[in-house]
Image (cartoon, rainbow, N blue to C red; front, top):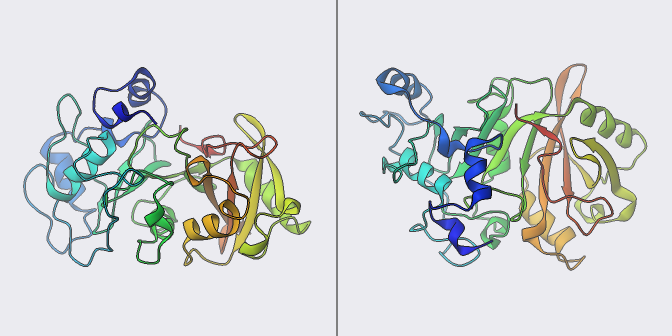
Length: 303
């Protein structure tokens, strides 16, 4: 992406994203002391801080962060979403005219924000580390926090910031398709037909049972989304304890000589009898596939 996207003087595409329908925590403003007091109830710290940022003191024992560099970013960067993270973690106000965000859940490893449009099924989880996005190699390492597991723990029914929608989806866009250069996982609704289609493919044994099978052509599925039918590589997992970034890089990207920056990654918790059954469909796509896509937005429902 262009270097100037790391300043708050945004190109037209990003400026529109800040006022449009894409998840953008950087736009949302705390509405005075009343909202600050309410936000304090969501802090996961032992003692919320005082002042306009009730959740801005992060607890200790955070996972390590990557070494600053071209692929992972630098803490001195001025990406709008990274500015929001710093406000929630240490109270540093974002530069004008960027408003202060609502910090819905602040921990040592991540912050949860509202997405845009602000609904009860549109949230973002962003690391407290400076990580530009899916292309950062640190994400594949064992010491990185398990952001997908944490996103599910927030988004699930009864979670810290639950997604109120019949079907839940978690997703991350490719470098090209995203609007902010601070890593974020979308926690949102997912198209109702997606659940039905995936369960149908599972019955036909067209979803990979092991990561080593994930890249095989026989486990490519066609799913209907807002942009039409798209092709995804489909994998089934019994939990989110594994590092999905490592699985994607090791079993798909490297063997197929692809580029991590061009991938999208989506998690759809499986439902059975109207409830989540504890297993997950993990989807990956990129534009190297016939009718592939590099965005999760076509399956997720924000508004």
